[in-house]
Image (cartoon, rainbow, N blue to C red; front, side):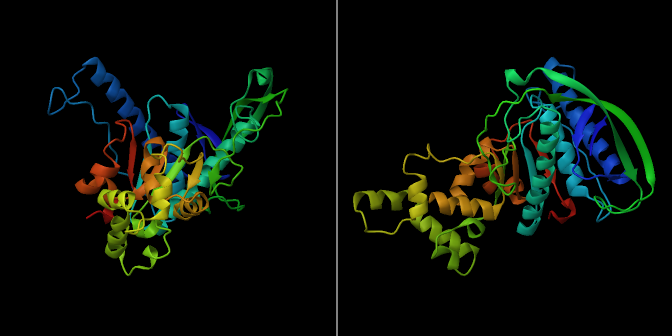
Length: 340
């Protein structure tokens, strides 16, 4: 369903919504609004308290809890991505921190569902051309069509099923637009788990350890993470590359890393789309590029990042991965009680 939440156009990919989900999303929106208002006040010098008079405003925080099985992840992703879409000028990346690799992949799969639904809705009302891309000038002549949509808040029942469920139904009239003309022009295809023909207009990435992203046949067969890291560094360290350059064949290097850095990395990039770990490894195999280093480089261009808590909390790792995140980034710690 697509509904208005306190002035925000929310794209929620299921037909019905729990009351808890609606309340959860409202609390999230209030937090994001408060962060924006705080930045405005800080810029105007309205007395936002800081420990340092030169320090910038550091945003707002919230702690939310939902019962297990009530769709917390889809609620969070729907609200935040809708907020990013509506307010690109006031939001940075969505940085979603989880504990395990299966949790990371589950988030990416749910994100694909949310963004695919958003694209379908934008295509329906003429905001987006079928196949992706922005509506052109030739499509600007439009016909107003008044339709009736309903937002159903379900107290009991499963999200997205066809059961009746008991709840309060709020019916609102909304005007949408359908284009009279369509330009038969295809946009550049995206990639990732949403499908090779779905240009979702953003880039979402997973980042994990070398062990979970390596595609080098010998290295991935090492016994543990430390051994994988050591083998990787033994083929990609600057002194190794320098020795190989001076005396080709004298020392083993990684062909995927060599290919990735062949032109200084300038020719390596990812299309828009949603890339979990397996999709990144597939892309790296096809292109002959190291998925780990490719993702590290693409972080600054991504709209959504999903990785382990330690990429933000461990100073050594955060210095390499998270140091350049925008101040407006939206940080989520999923299952935060697991942080130790």
